[in-house]
Length: 183
Image 1: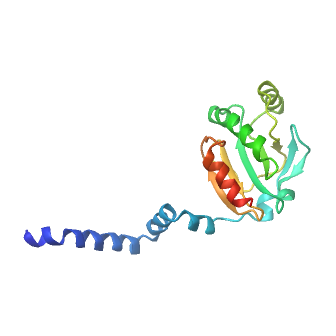
Image 2: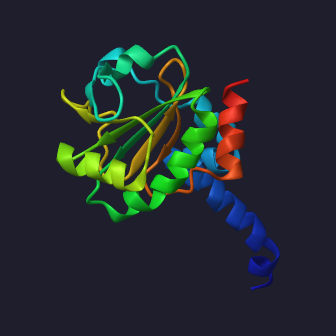
Image 3: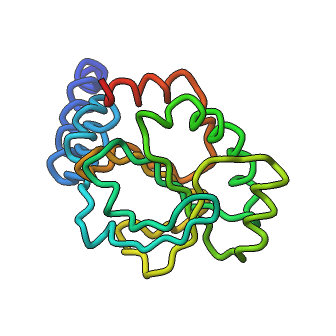
């Protein structure tokens, strides 16, 4: 019993190290948790084929998403008028757009929605952020599984940030994050 009391800490450390070697995904999760910069460095970079999405503009000209690659950061958001969390984050997206539109290309894609409902939503709320409806298939590397889903992409298409939930996009931390990549 005395042996156990004296060596419990050592046994816990050895067990922890063993878990790290047996399950490498645990090691990656810990690395991303304690060293977030490494997570950005290991991020996925979208290929041109992933960004080849023809978009019909609702309050902006029609574009292909890949035409924006190489210019500025891209704020890519998938949402729907039918989605309460999507509607909840819209005011913060509008405020972020108002202050960062010179540094960031905003692309909000209305999903599973009717064009008339999207136009009415935009008009009723006086939103001016560029909104589109996809006219071509969306790659599985980008296609959201939940709504809203937002990506912040750098000029090369690397995913700097992915958020699978509603968020306050006008927060100080978001502004600082964008400023760090647009200097």
